[in-house]
Image 1: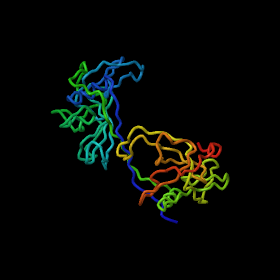
Image 2: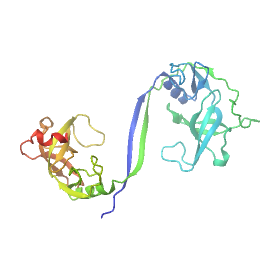
Image 3: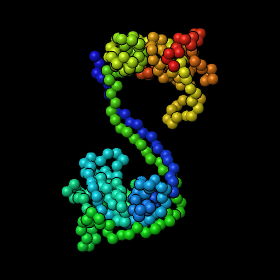
Length: 324
């Protein structure tokens, strides 16, 4: 049996969102080295600010400025910083209640080691040298003590009182782009490892359920209908039938395929499950349900580049209606 495959994979995309008036003021304020919170109906100051009262659900817009110093309420040490985290050396994740605020802000604390971090310690904002209107405008927190000042008690606020603020700045930040990324190692398992190895030989294989006798492509190692293991390997195709399809009119980044093009579900001969594939060799507006197609392999390719018409008559609907 060949070794089960595994490979590192990265899922990454930019998440773009617009900002309402409260978040716009908060992030623009960070760019200007001002930390804003919002005042609730019962007099609490929330930092980071929210647009709706978490107790009453009423909309809140009363912005106030709080201090750039605060108190650590709880913390955890990060021994191995990951890509994209605030600091490249070990640091503490901390919840900091800024002076004048009633809630805590999550950020990084630059400290020499876990022995230097404690609940109640006083800290201050270390501003990033270049600021653009994002939470990263706070580079991190750092330990801070006024002359003669020690740790704060549980109710300490450094004597700072929140001051009303209009939330108005020049060139307001109205939207952000937040990169989302997930790094992981994927293993397809025994069944799909066999499937991938067969593709490298320009063959397509599935597995037959010993109970219902359906052939699944790609194989999953078990029948989703009967819940039993599948081990009998069955070669399918290379021809098949288009069951459903869509016309793609938006060009994907880094994909060297001109639009419009057709992406389809294709039921390979002998399979009881349709798989995905691009249709080529035919104008996009002539692709249809029932079209008979065959795989086209690129030189050295490990999977079909696309599927093209075989020239056979279209398949009867009753042949593939259960595979839509």
